[in-house]
Figure 1 (cartoon, one colour):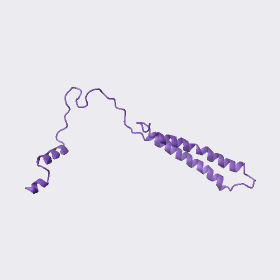
Figure 2: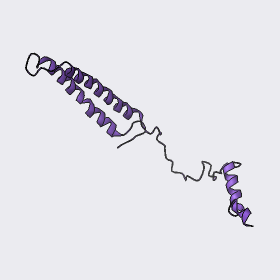
Figure 3: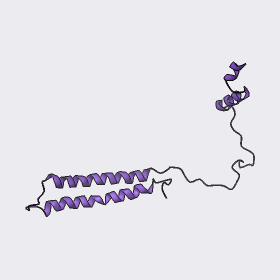
Figure 4: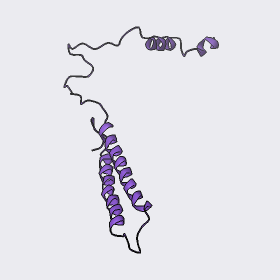
Length: 124
């Protein structure tokens, strides 16, 4: 459970659906304030139902954002087929060799050979 190769953490998926459930609540609150409370002593100002409808849209966008994040944040690493052969040997049975001539391996071997790097020249 959690992050997979194609999808993000499951929690994002659950949070998006839970958040999405608030959208119908806001829509119904706005409609009920317009329809049921009209011409009563509890009638609301026009800003209140409008804020409920705007909240409905905000919730939809936030839920979509979480769902999109879940859909697009997997590790992206393909599943690797494991072989039963030894990792240190190649397919023909020989031991694979490291590439030669790289600057990092030559500088590392030269500093090891001099007995500790730049300080050894000052010590003599």
